[in-house]
Length: 124
Image (cartoon, rainbow, N blue to C red; front, side):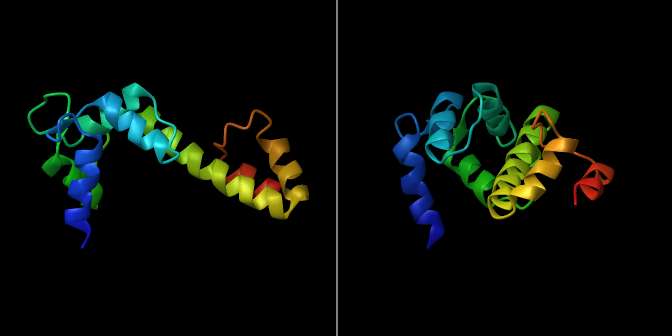
């Protein structure tokens, strides 16, 4: 099952197998292809860190992985996540339809990947 394997994963990147701090967590997320800053890794840990120790235990890590409703109270983390999803989607769309990519470039020339519904409608 998943949880015994999750313990192995946690022990592979945590400090002596007990706690995982922001630096280790950032490295793991980057190894998985997720671009996060040290500050963002710290905010993700803070969302599950029950004792405010600046690191997460295996139990807290498990809560993070299996939580249906993890609350990260940070607008910048949420915006980066939304932009990463939008970028991935746009890369896939423009690879299949370059003309649509040109139209999206017209409404989002800086490639911020944050467009509203009106801009989206005008692009399609």
